[in-house]
Amino acid sequence: MKTRVKICGITNLQDALLAAEMGADALGFVFYEGSKRCISYESAREIIHKLPPFIIKCGVFVDEKWEKIMEIRDFCKLDRVQVYAGDESLCNNIVPGITIMAFRIRDRKDVETAQKSEAFPLLDSYHEKMHGGSGTKFNWKLLADFGRPFILAGGINPENIDMALKLDPYAIDIASGVESAPGRKNPEKMREIFRKVDYYFSSQGEREGVAPTALLVEGATQAPKIARPRKDEGNIQKGGLLL
Image (cartoon, rainbow, N blue to C red; front, side, top):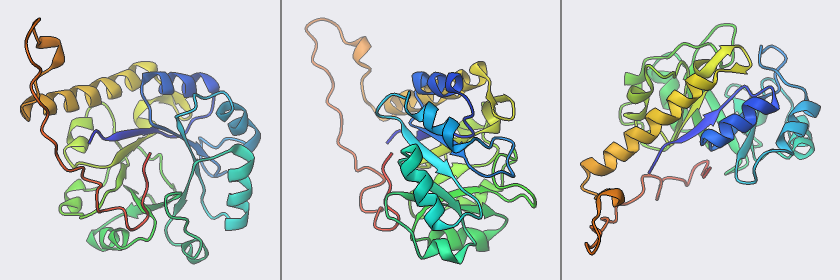
């Protein structure tokens, strides 16, 4: 299954529409005042109302009460809410298929905690003062045999995207890796990310023996595609999430 792409830290309509046009599956809107990518509820709502219908809209919250999160979700018409692990009050209000729980990874212990999450886990880099958007990656070797679908975040950019995709994440979450400045997306960097994702999975199809349709000649029969089990089948009992 092709890895989904979430472009996070959207602050303006131009970037949102460009990301959607290039192939983003989801867009992230940060409602945390401590972030350089923070957006007002009103501005996010205005952008969301102008997005294509099949783009997933995700709100990112830090240290916010669950009642307030639900209020903002309804006001902005969000499809997903992303919160950070550590707030016990949020752990009691997880909505399967809706809640994404972000874990800031320092060591194997943090990974093991994320594996047990009732919400869908997002694995991000630990930063003492920042909740996402730091532009740094954690030790991805810690994710060997993670055992369930996850979203990978933290320091992903056009230079290391291939390495990230080899970890077989359900989705990748990118903010600073496609920016020219915090909250301002760089079209060329975004284009390169989507180009590399498309190339990676088209090349994977060729390696698995699926004949490219463009190479078929008139009168030839298209090579049958072998049915392969999806990696998410049977693995969404906890925090099941389909973008």
